[in-house]
Length: 431
Image 1 (cartoon, rainbow, N blue to C red):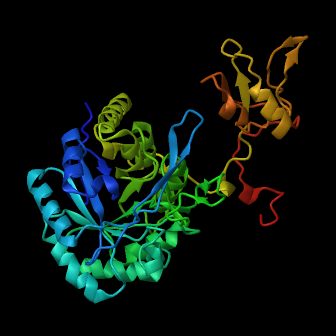
Image 2: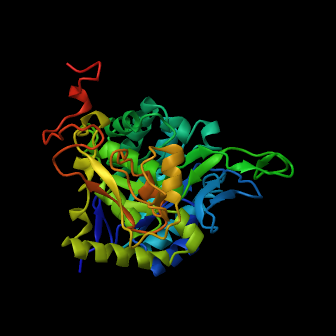
Image 3: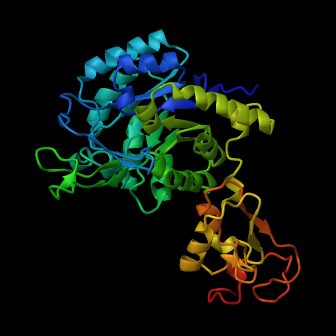
Protein backbone atom coordinates (compact mmCIF):
# COMPACT_ATOMS: atom_id res chain seq x y z
CA UNK A 1 0.00 0.00 0.00
CA UNK A 2 1.08 3.57 -0.67
CA UNK A 3 2.76 5.36 2.20
CA UNK A 4 0.77 8.46 3.19
CA UNK A 5 3.39 9.68 5.65
CA UNK A 6 4.01 13.34 4.95
CA UNK A 7 7.07 15.52 5.37
CA UNK A 8 6.46 19.20 4.74
CA UNK A 9 9.39 21.52 5.46
CA UNK A 10 10.81 18.74 7.63
CA UNK A 11 7.56 18.61 9.64
CA UNK A 12 6.41 15.01 9.95
CA UNK A 13 2.77 13.91 10.02
CA UNK A 14 1.11 10.52 9.43
CA UNK A 15 -0.76 11.85 6.38
CA UNK A 16 -0.83 15.05 4.28
CA UNK A 17 -4.26 16.18 5.49
CA UNK A 18 -4.17 19.13 7.89
CA UNK A 19 -7.07 21.11 9.33
CA UNK A 20 -6.81 24.74 8.24
CA UNK A 21 -6.72 27.63 10.66
CA UNK A 22 -10.41 28.17 11.46
CA UNK A 23 -13.09 27.38 14.08
CA UNK A 24 -12.27 23.61 14.03
CA UNK A 25 -8.78 24.40 15.38
CA UNK A 26 -9.76 27.02 17.94
CA UNK A 27 -9.13 25.01 21.09
CA UNK A 28 -7.53 21.85 22.48
CA UNK A 29 -10.86 20.01 22.70
CA UNK A 30 -11.47 20.25 18.95
CA UNK A 31 -7.87 19.48 18.01
CA UNK A 32 -7.75 16.45 20.31
CA UNK A 33 -10.90 15.08 18.66
CA UNK A 34 -9.40 15.71 15.22
CA UNK A 35 -6.22 13.84 16.06
CA UNK A 36 -8.21 10.97 17.55
CA UNK A 37 -10.09 10.78 14.25
CA UNK A 38 -6.80 10.54 12.34
CA UNK A 39 -5.92 13.99 10.96
CA UNK A 40 -2.24 14.49 10.19
CA UNK A 41 -1.93 18.01 11.52
CA UNK A 42 -3.64 21.28 12.34
CA UNK A 43 -2.98 24.95 11.83
CA UNK A 44 -4.17 26.50 15.08
CA UNK A 45 -6.75 29.24 14.72
CA UNK A 46 -4.98 32.54 14.13
CA UNK A 47 -3.38 34.09 17.18
CA UNK A 48 -3.09 37.83 17.75
CA UNK A 49 -1.80 40.13 20.42
CA UNK A 50 -3.50 40.69 23.76
CA UNK A 51 -6.10 41.84 24.59
CA UNK A 52 -8.01 39.54 22.21
CA UNK A 53 -10.50 40.79 19.64
CA UNK A 54 -14.26 40.51 20.14
CA UNK A 55 -16.38 38.54 17.66
CA UNK A 56 -20.03 39.25 16.94
CA UNK A 57 -22.55 37.36 19.03
CA UNK A 58 -24.92 36.34 16.28
CA UNK A 59 -24.89 34.82 12.80
CA UNK A 60 -21.32 34.39 11.56
CA UNK A 61 -21.92 31.96 8.70
CA UNK A 62 -24.12 31.86 5.64
CA UNK A 63 -24.17 29.26 2.90
CA UNK A 64 -24.75 28.70 -0.79
CA UNK A 65 -26.68 25.46 -1.27
CA UNK A 66 -27.11 23.18 -4.25
CA UNK A 67 -30.59 22.08 -5.30
CA UNK A 68 -30.28 19.05 -3.02
CA UNK A 69 -29.20 21.32 -0.13
CA UNK A 70 -25.56 20.42 -0.08
CA UNK A 71 -23.27 23.22 1.09
CA UNK A 72 -21.20 24.28 -1.92
CA UNK A 73 -20.09 27.63 -0.53
CA UNK A 74 -19.74 29.11 2.94
CA UNK A 75 -19.28 32.73 3.97
CA UNK A 76 -18.01 33.73 7.39
CA UNK A 77 -17.48 37.01 9.22
CA UNK A 78 -15.65 35.44 12.16
CA UNK A 79 -12.34 37.01 13.11
CA UNK A 80 -9.20 35.49 14.59
CA UNK A 81 -9.27 33.80 18.01
CA UNK A 82 -11.18 35.73 20.64
CA UNK A 83 -9.64 33.77 23.52
CA UNK A 84 -6.74 35.10 25.63
CA UNK A 85 -3.36 34.43 24.07
CA UNK A 86 -2.05 32.59 27.14
CA UNK A 87 -5.02 30.21 27.05
CA UNK A 88 -4.19 29.32 23.46
CA UNK A 89 -0.48 28.92 24.24
CA UNK A 90 -1.15 26.62 27.18
CA UNK A 91 -3.45 24.43 25.10
CA UNK A 92 -1.04 24.30 22.16
CA UNK A 93 1.74 23.15 24.48
CA UNK A 94 -0.58 20.52 25.95
CA UNK A 95 -1.62 19.20 22.52
CA UNK A 96 1.95 18.98 21.25
CA UNK A 97 2.94 16.91 24.28
CA UNK A 98 -0.04 14.60 23.86
CA UNK A 99 0.37 14.21 20.08
CA UNK A 100 4.08 14.53 19.27
CA UNK A 101 3.68 12.74 15.92
CA UNK A 102 1.17 15.27 14.56
CA UNK A 103 1.93 18.59 12.92
CA UNK A 104 0.95 21.68 14.89
CA UNK A 105 1.37 25.00 13.09
CA UNK A 106 0.74 28.36 14.75
CA UNK A 107 -1.17 30.81 12.58
CA UNK A 108 -0.38 34.41 13.50
CA UNK A 109 -1.64 37.86 12.55
CA UNK A 110 0.15 40.85 14.03
CA UNK A 111 0.34 44.61 13.38
CA UNK A 112 2.96 45.87 10.96
CA UNK A 113 5.67 46.84 13.41
CA UNK A 114 8.80 44.83 14.10
CA UNK A 115 8.68 45.18 17.91
CA UNK A 116 5.35 43.33 18.08
CA UNK A 117 6.70 40.42 16.04
CA UNK A 118 9.83 40.32 18.19
CA UNK A 119 7.68 40.12 21.32
CA UNK A 120 5.14 37.48 20.31
CA UNK A 121 6.86 35.03 17.97
CA UNK A 122 9.36 33.60 20.51
CA UNK A 123 6.53 33.32 23.02
CA UNK A 124 4.43 31.30 20.57
CA UNK A 125 7.37 29.21 19.41
CA UNK A 126 8.01 28.16 23.00
CA UNK A 127 4.83 26.03 22.90
CA UNK A 128 6.67 23.48 20.77
CA UNK A 129 4.75 24.42 17.62
CA UNK A 130 6.36 22.96 14.51
CA UNK A 131 6.15 26.16 12.49
CA UNK A 132 4.31 29.39 11.76
CA UNK A 133 1.72 30.31 9.16
CA UNK A 134 1.55 34.06 8.59
CA UNK A 135 -2.08 34.95 7.93
CA UNK A 136 -1.93 37.57 5.19
CA UNK A 137 -5.25 36.52 3.74
CA UNK A 138 -8.26 37.27 5.97
CA UNK A 139 -10.40 39.70 3.90
CA UNK A 140 -12.75 41.01 6.59
CA UNK A 141 -12.59 42.62 9.99
CA UNK A 142 -8.85 42.32 10.49
CA UNK A 143 -8.07 43.91 7.11
CA UNK A 144 -9.87 47.04 8.28
CA UNK A 145 -7.33 47.12 11.11
CA UNK A 146 -4.37 47.05 8.73
CA UNK A 147 -3.75 43.30 8.96
CA UNK A 148 -4.81 40.19 7.02
CA UNK A 149 -5.53 40.93 3.37
CA UNK A 150 -4.51 44.56 3.87
CA UNK A 151 -0.96 43.21 4.20
CA UNK A 152 -1.43 40.33 1.77
CA UNK A 153 -2.35 42.64 -1.11
CA UNK A 154 0.88 44.64 -0.84
CA UNK A 155 4.01 42.70 -1.87
CA UNK A 156 6.33 45.05 0.03
CA UNK A 157 4.44 44.44 3.27
CA UNK A 158 4.51 40.69 2.74
CA UNK A 159 8.26 40.71 2.25
CA UNK A 160 8.80 42.92 5.29
CA UNK A 161 6.67 40.86 7.67
CA UNK A 162 8.14 37.59 6.37
CA UNK A 163 11.63 38.91 7.06
CA UNK A 164 10.59 39.76 10.62
CA UNK A 165 9.18 36.27 11.11
CA UNK A 166 12.37 34.65 9.85
CA UNK A 167 14.37 36.93 12.12
CA UNK A 168 12.51 36.05 15.32
CA UNK A 169 11.77 32.35 14.92
CA UNK A 170 13.86 29.27 14.19
CA UNK A 171 10.99 27.14 12.92
CA UNK A 172 9.69 27.04 9.32
CA UNK A 173 7.60 29.97 8.11
CA UNK A 174 4.63 29.46 5.78
CA UNK A 175 3.06 32.53 4.20
CA UNK A 176 -0.71 32.27 3.67
CA UNK A 177 -1.71 34.22 0.57
CA UNK A 178 -4.93 36.05 -0.18
CA UNK A 179 -6.82 35.34 -3.42
CA UNK A 180 -8.16 38.90 -3.37
CA UNK A 181 -5.57 40.07 -5.89
CA UNK A 182 -5.55 40.21 -9.68
CA UNK A 183 -2.30 38.22 -9.95
CA UNK A 184 -1.03 35.77 -7.34
CA UNK A 185 2.58 35.82 -8.57
CA UNK A 186 3.77 39.21 -7.20
CA UNK A 187 2.66 38.35 -3.66
CA UNK A 188 4.13 34.83 -3.88
CA UNK A 189 7.39 36.28 -5.18
CA UNK A 190 7.41 38.76 -2.28
CA UNK A 191 7.06 35.89 0.19
CA UNK A 192 9.99 34.13 -1.46
CA UNK A 193 12.11 37.30 -1.32
CA UNK A 194 11.30 37.64 2.37
CA UNK A 195 12.67 34.16 3.01
CA UNK A 196 9.43 32.19 3.33
CA UNK A 197 9.97 28.45 3.57
CA UNK A 198 6.61 27.77 1.89
CA UNK A 199 3.30 29.34 0.92
CA UNK A 200 -0.25 28.24 1.62
CA UNK A 201 -3.26 29.24 -0.46
CA UNK A 202 -5.92 30.23 -0.89
CA UNK A 203 -7.47 32.11 1.98
CA UNK A 204 -11.10 33.16 1.68
CA UNK A 205 -12.56 35.37 -1.05
CA UNK A 206 -14.28 38.65 -0.25
CA UNK A 207 -18.02 38.18 -0.60
CA UNK A 208 -21.60 39.03 0.28
CA UNK A 209 -23.90 36.02 -0.01
CA UNK A 210 -27.39 37.44 -0.57
CA UNK A 211 -30.13 39.65 0.80
CA UNK A 212 -33.00 38.92 3.19
CA UNK A 213 -36.02 38.87 0.88
CA UNK A 214 -38.42 40.04 3.59
CA UNK A 215 -36.45 42.98 4.95
CA UNK A 216 -34.33 43.71 1.85
CA UNK A 217 -31.22 43.97 3.99
CA UNK A 218 -28.12 41.93 3.36
CA UNK A 219 -28.02 38.51 4.99
CA UNK A 220 -26.92 37.75 7.65
CA UNK A 221 -27.01 40.88 9.79
CA UNK A 222 -26.08 41.85 13.31
CA UNK A 223 -28.69 44.26 14.70
CA UNK A 224 -29.76 45.18 11.17
CA UNK A 225 -26.29 45.70 9.67
CA UNK A 226 -24.08 43.25 7.81
CA UNK A 227 -20.53 43.10 6.53
CA UNK A 228 -18.63 41.44 3.72
CA UNK A 229 -17.03 38.15 4.73
CA UNK A 230 -14.74 35.40 3.53
CA UNK A 231 -16.05 32.86 0.99
CA UNK A 232 -14.83 29.27 1.00
CA UNK A 233 -16.00 25.74 0.24
CA UNK A 234 -16.28 23.64 -2.90
CA UNK A 235 -17.17 26.63 -5.09
CA UNK A 236 -13.74 28.26 -4.63
CA UNK A 237 -11.70 25.20 -5.61
CA UNK A 238 -11.16 26.14 -9.30
CA UNK A 239 -9.82 29.55 -8.25
CA UNK A 240 -7.50 27.91 -5.73
CA UNK A 241 -6.21 25.36 -8.26
CA UNK A 242 -5.43 28.11 -10.76
CA UNK A 243 -3.40 30.07 -8.23
CA UNK A 244 -1.56 26.98 -6.96
CA UNK A 245 -0.64 26.00 -10.53
CA UNK A 246 0.54 29.53 -11.36
CA UNK A 247 3.00 29.44 -8.48
CA UNK A 248 4.10 25.88 -9.25
CA UNK A 249 4.91 26.64 -12.91
CA UNK A 250 6.55 30.05 -12.51
CA UNK A 251 10.34 29.89 -12.49
CA UNK A 252 10.65 32.45 -9.68
CA UNK A 253 8.28 30.60 -7.34
CA UNK A 254 8.40 26.96 -8.50
CA UNK A 255 10.83 26.01 -5.74
CA UNK A 256 8.41 27.15 -3.01
CA UNK A 257 6.63 24.23 -1.32
CA UNK A 258 2.87 24.75 -1.39
CA UNK A 259 0.21 23.85 1.15
CA UNK A 260 -3.01 23.74 -0.88
CA UNK A 261 -6.27 25.13 0.50
CA UNK A 262 -9.69 25.76 -0.99
CA UNK A 263 -12.74 23.56 -1.50
CA UNK A 264 -11.21 20.17 -0.69
CA UNK A 265 -13.99 17.79 0.27
CA UNK A 266 -12.85 14.35 -0.90
CA UNK A 267 -9.71 12.52 -2.05
CA UNK A 268 -10.23 13.54 -5.69
CA UNK A 269 -9.99 17.19 -4.71
CA UNK A 270 -6.76 16.44 -2.89
CA UNK A 271 -5.37 14.67 -5.97
CA UNK A 272 -6.09 17.81 -8.01
CA UNK A 273 -4.06 19.94 -5.60
CA UNK A 274 -1.18 17.48 -5.37
CA UNK A 275 -0.92 17.01 -9.14
CA UNK A 276 -0.91 20.77 -9.66
CA UNK A 277 1.94 21.37 -7.24
CA UNK A 278 0.80 21.22 -3.61
CA UNK A 279 2.78 19.01 -1.23
CA UNK A 280 0.07 18.81 1.41
CA UNK A 281 -3.47 20.15 1.81
CA UNK A 282 -5.51 21.96 4.43
CA UNK A 283 -9.25 21.51 4.91
CA UNK A 284 -11.87 23.50 6.78
CA UNK A 285 -15.35 23.78 5.24
CA UNK A 286 -15.85 20.06 4.61
CA UNK A 287 -14.94 19.30 8.21
CA UNK A 288 -17.33 21.99 9.45
CA UNK A 289 -20.15 20.54 7.35
CA UNK A 290 -19.54 16.79 7.82
CA UNK A 291 -17.31 16.43 10.89
CA UNK A 292 -13.82 15.09 11.48
CA UNK A 293 -14.54 11.52 10.36
CA UNK A 294 -14.22 12.54 6.71
CA UNK A 295 -10.52 11.88 7.24
CA UNK A 296 -11.24 8.15 6.78
CA UNK A 297 -12.48 8.66 3.21
CA UNK A 298 -9.70 11.12 2.47
CA UNK A 299 -6.91 8.75 3.48
CA UNK A 300 -8.40 5.53 2.11
CA UNK A 301 -9.36 7.15 -1.20
CA UNK A 302 -5.94 8.73 -1.70
CA UNK A 303 -4.17 5.50 -0.76
CA UNK A 304 -6.25 3.48 -3.24
CA UNK A 305 -5.61 6.02 -5.99
CA UNK A 306 -1.85 5.95 -5.45
CA UNK A 307 -1.88 2.14 -5.46
CA UNK A 308 -3.74 2.06 -8.78
CA UNK A 309 -1.22 4.47 -10.26
CA UNK A 310 1.71 2.43 -8.98
CA UNK A 311 2.90 5.32 -6.82
CA UNK A 312 4.64 4.65 -3.55
CA UNK A 313 3.91 7.95 -1.82
CA UNK A 314 2.22 11.33 -2.21
CA UNK A 315 5.53 12.87 -3.30
CA UNK A 316 5.31 10.73 -6.47
CA UNK A 317 2.10 12.58 -7.36
CA UNK A 318 3.14 16.14 -6.50
CA UNK A 319 3.43 18.34 -9.60
CA UNK A 320 2.60 15.63 -12.14
CA UNK A 321 0.07 17.85 -13.94
CA UNK A 322 2.11 21.07 -13.84
CA UNK A 323 3.86 20.52 -17.22
CA UNK A 324 0.44 20.30 -18.88
CA UNK A 325 -0.53 23.81 -17.76
CA UNK A 326 0.32 26.51 -20.30
CA UNK A 327 -0.88 29.85 -21.59
CA UNK A 328 -3.69 29.91 -24.16
CA UNK A 329 -1.45 31.09 -26.99
CA UNK A 330 0.55 27.87 -26.81
CA UNK A 331 -2.43 25.56 -27.41
CA UNK A 332 -2.38 23.48 -30.61
CA UNK A 333 -4.88 25.06 -33.00
CA UNK A 334 -4.76 22.08 -35.37
CA UNK A 335 -6.04 19.63 -32.76
CA UNK A 336 -9.70 18.68 -33.32
CA UNK A 337 -12.18 16.90 -31.05
CA UNK A 338 -15.88 16.22 -31.58
CA UNK A 339 -18.68 15.17 -29.25
CA UNK A 340 -20.02 11.61 -29.58
CA UNK A 341 -23.30 10.44 -28.02
CA UNK A 342 -23.61 6.82 -26.85
CA UNK A 343 -27.13 5.92 -27.95
CA UNK A 344 -27.28 2.96 -25.56
CA UNK A 345 -26.77 5.28 -22.58
CA UNK A 346 -28.84 8.21 -23.84
CA UNK A 347 -32.09 8.72 -21.84
CA UNK A 348 -33.41 11.21 -24.42
CA UNK A 349 -33.78 14.06 -21.93
CA UNK A 350 -32.78 16.58 -24.60
CA UNK A 351 -30.59 18.79 -22.43
CA UNK A 352 -27.67 18.53 -24.84
CA UNK A 353 -29.84 19.65 -27.76
CA UNK A 354 -31.40 22.58 -25.88
CA UNK A 355 -28.12 24.07 -24.67
CA UNK A 356 -26.41 23.57 -28.00
CA UNK A 357 -29.39 24.97 -29.94
CA UNK A 358 -29.93 27.99 -27.70
CA UNK A 359 -26.43 28.93 -26.59
CA UNK A 360 -23.83 27.17 -28.71
CA UNK A 361 -23.51 25.87 -32.29
CA UNK A 362 -26.73 24.10 -33.27
CA UNK A 363 -24.76 20.87 -33.63
CA UNK A 364 -27.13 18.32 -32.02
CA UNK A 365 -30.31 16.97 -33.61
CA UNK A 366 -33.56 16.34 -31.72
CA UNK A 367 -35.22 14.10 -34.32
CA UNK A 368 -33.88 11.63 -36.87
CA UNK A 369 -36.26 10.14 -39.43
CA UNK A 370 -39.21 11.41 -37.41
CA UNK A 371 -38.04 9.81 -34.14
CA UNK A 372 -36.75 11.56 -31.01
CA UNK A 373 -33.01 11.02 -31.29
CA UNK A 374 -30.02 13.15 -30.36
CA UNK A 375 -26.99 12.95 -32.61
CA UNK A 376 -24.01 15.23 -33.16
CA UNK A 377 -23.74 17.03 -36.48
CA UNK A 378 -20.00 16.85 -37.08
CA UNK A 379 -19.99 19.70 -39.58
CA UNK A 380 -21.31 22.10 -36.90
CA UNK A 381 -19.63 20.72 -33.77
CA UNK A 382 -16.65 22.75 -32.56
CA UNK A 383 -15.84 20.43 -29.66
CA UNK A 384 -16.73 22.98 -26.98
CA UNK A 385 -17.64 20.30 -24.37
CA UNK A 386 -20.84 22.06 -23.23
CA UNK A 387 -23.02 19.02 -23.99
CA UNK A 388 -20.71 16.78 -21.94
CA UNK A 389 -20.94 19.24 -19.05
CA UNK A 390 -24.75 19.27 -18.87
CA UNK A 391 -25.52 15.62 -19.68
CA UNK A 392 -27.00 13.93 -16.56
CA UNK A 393 -25.69 10.46 -17.54
CA UNK A 394 -22.03 9.86 -16.80
CA UNK A 395 -20.18 8.72 -19.92
CA UNK A 396 -23.09 9.16 -22.29
CA UNK A 397 -21.41 11.98 -24.21
CA UNK A 398 -17.67 11.97 -24.72
CA UNK A 399 -15.14 13.97 -26.66
CA UNK A 400 -13.13 12.06 -29.25
CA UNK A 401 -10.17 13.24 -31.25
CA UNK A 402 -10.78 13.48 -34.97
CA UNK A 403 -8.38 11.30 -36.92
CA UNK A 404 -6.03 12.91 -39.43
CA UNK A 405 -7.88 13.74 -42.61
CA UNK A 406 -10.52 16.27 -43.64
CA UNK A 407 -12.03 18.62 -41.07
CA UNK A 408 -15.81 18.48 -41.69
CA UNK A 409 -16.15 22.08 -40.47
CA UNK A 410 -13.86 23.58 -43.09
CA UNK A 411 -13.34 20.88 -45.66
CA UNK A 412 -9.61 21.38 -45.20
CA UNK A 413 -7.03 18.76 -44.40
CA UNK A 414 -6.12 18.48 -40.73
CA UNK A 415 -2.43 19.05 -40.26
CA UNK A 416 -0.45 16.82 -37.92
CA UNK A 417 1.96 19.69 -37.37
CA UNK A 418 1.29 21.70 -34.21
CA UNK A 419 0.27 25.32 -34.53
CA UNK A 420 -0.42 27.89 -31.83
CA UNK A 421 -1.84 31.39 -31.66
CA UNK A 422 1.65 32.85 -31.42
CA UNK A 423 2.27 31.80 -35.03
CA UNK A 424 -1.29 31.92 -36.33
CA UNK A 425 -1.72 34.11 -39.47
CA UNK A 426 -4.81 35.78 -37.94
CA UNK A 427 -2.84 36.92 -34.91
CA UNK A 428 -1.85 40.55 -35.53
CA UNK A 429 1.12 40.10 -33.19
CA UNK A 430 2.43 37.02 -35.01
CA UNK A 431 5.74 37.47 -36.74
